[in-house]
View 1 (cartoon, rainbow, N blue to C red):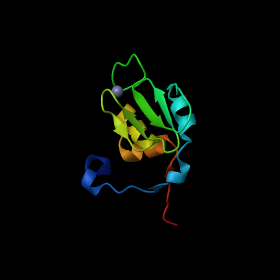
View 2: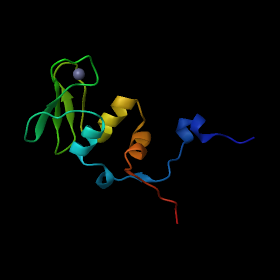
View 3: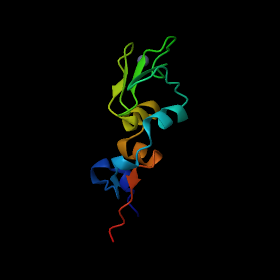
View 4: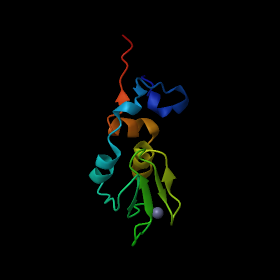
Length: 107
Ligand SMILES: [Zn+2]
């Protein structure tokens, strides 16, 4: 009988590693998620997807990808954190979804 490693998080060995340099550009990423960025400069305003938002409560730093909602308190340091948060993904799942997971095949 085969043992599914995914069933046991403690024994789970991930192949590959996160590569920050592969993360998408913050502005392009947020736009791809349908987030409209208002304003200019490093910090932009946007409608928060984490609570029913009518006026833009979400502040997004387009240089780092960081986000912070002034209304519901959602926050994170980069687009990876945002992606994990929005889709309830694990760190590795979000890395892969954003193309920032570099596979190391051990050779
Ligand atoms: Zn919010």
